[in-house]
Every structure is written in C-alpha cells, then in structure tokens.
Image 1 (cartoon, rainbow, N blue to C red):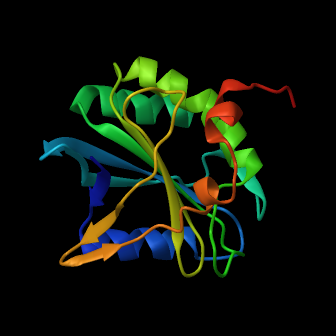
Image 2 (image 1 turned 60 degrees about the vertical axis):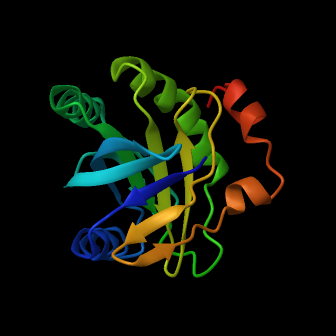
Amino acid sequence: MGVCVNMDKRVLWSMRDFLLRDQNEHAAFLFAEICNENARTVFIIKDYYPILNKVSENSPYGFSLDENAQSRIIKRACDTGFSLVEVHSHPLTKKGTAFSSYDLQGLSEFVPYVWWRLKRRPYLALVFGQTDYDALVWRRSPSYPERLDGIIVGNDLLLPTNKTVLRGLNINKTYGRRSKV
C-alpha cells in the first residue's frame, strides 16, 4: 500500500520553474483528485495555483502564507472536492532536499486545520531543491505523515529523497509536540 502523485510533465516543469526562479523560497498549491487503485492512493493533479505576493514573510529561509490566501485556497478545495498538495522550494539546496524544522513546525499546525476543514481528505506536502525533492503525506491521520512512493510523470517515476524520514527524525513525535515561537 503506497501513495503516489500523477502529474503532467508541463505542470511539473512550470511549477519547478516558478519555485526555483530565484534564491527565495516560493510556494504553490496543487489541487488533486484522489483515486484509490489496488490499495494505492493516487493524487491526480488537476490544477496548479502559484502563490504570488501572498506571503507574510519571504526570505531564502522561509515563508508563511497570509490568512486571506489560506482561506481562498481552502475554500477552493472545499468547493471542488479536491485534496490539497502544498509545494514549496528550498532553492539553495543542491542535493538531498528535506523538510526543515521550520517546515515541520508549520505543517504540525496547518495540516490538522486543513484536515478538519476538508473533511479528512488526504494532504500532501512537497519540497523541491535544485535537483530533487522530498515529500510527506497525511492520508489516515493529520498527526502521522507517511512517505510518498514518487511522482509519476508519463512513464517515469521520480523518487523523493525521503531525507526527512531517513535522517532519523521521529516525525510522529515532532507532530505531536507544539512549540511557541
């Protein structure tokens, strides 16, 4: 039983060009139809929404989405019945892309909220570096992310680094803990 993303090549390259256009972190949301095939969950990408000037903080080291943008994105997912795929960049990472502790803290707060608002629809987060990407998926619980098998583009399967999971981080503990900043 695994999870994968099915994405058109044009969407993937357009998204990567947008995310890695300079040395700042950028973000986008993808809207996905969920299909269960042979015990595998497939996120079929239907639409792409780049975040333009919607961040309350933007630097090479992080960003946070303003509340109005969050509301519009979640409303659109509610209205269409799609799941959300959050995508952002770590443009200074050349190899071995992984979620930062800042990313994990933000996801620990945002995922349960989206999970509730979207009536338990699966949620996926992707982070792209210059040459690779990492991913986390929430399909059974907003507290316990799983790894992604890969992104299917045509006949190719693009594998994630899985560095967030493999670096020894206990993501379940990280998500159970909330810290004040």
